[in-house]
Image 1 (spheres, one colour):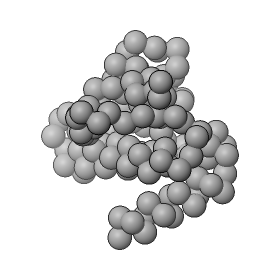
Image 2 (spheres, one colour; image 1 turned 180 degrees about the vertical axis):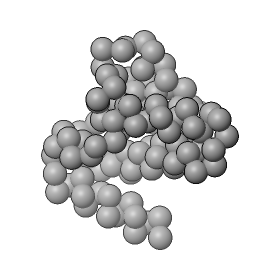
Image 3 (cartoon, one colour; image 1 turned 135 degrees about the vertical axis):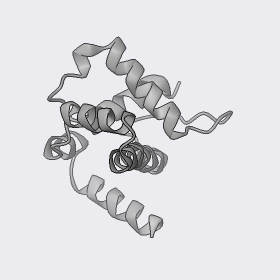
Image 4 (cartoon, rainbow, N blue to C red; image 1 turned 30 degrees about the vertical axis):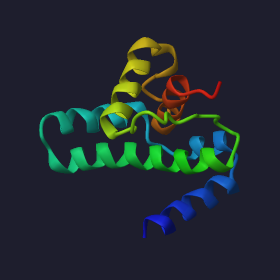
Amino acid sequence: MPRLLCSAVFLALLSFSIPSAFAEDNFTMQNWEQIEAKAKRGRPRASGLHDGYLAGVRDTLRFYSKVGKTFPICWPKDHEIDIGLVSDTVDAVRKGHPDIAKPQDNFAYIVVLSLYDAYPCR
């Protein structure tokens, strides 16, 4: 099932340019902040959505970065990138660069920029 899901996501990414795919998604920073607040209050559904969304974006990009050159993200070989690390990375970019993390911005785009900022290919 995960392999089928990754394949479907990859095909969808190939069907659109990355910016237009992000423009189609209405999941904004404002939506993310609402989910994050509920997750921090211990709401299981929000916690699952929070972790699942981050894991989905991370896993798709990990797969995509192996076959594409759109986002040259180089995953570290010395440690696993878990959900906590992704969340901390995204939070650091949101706090450190409020100019690129506006409430109406697409959240998946912010995750991509955050991971690219943290793990660029050199």
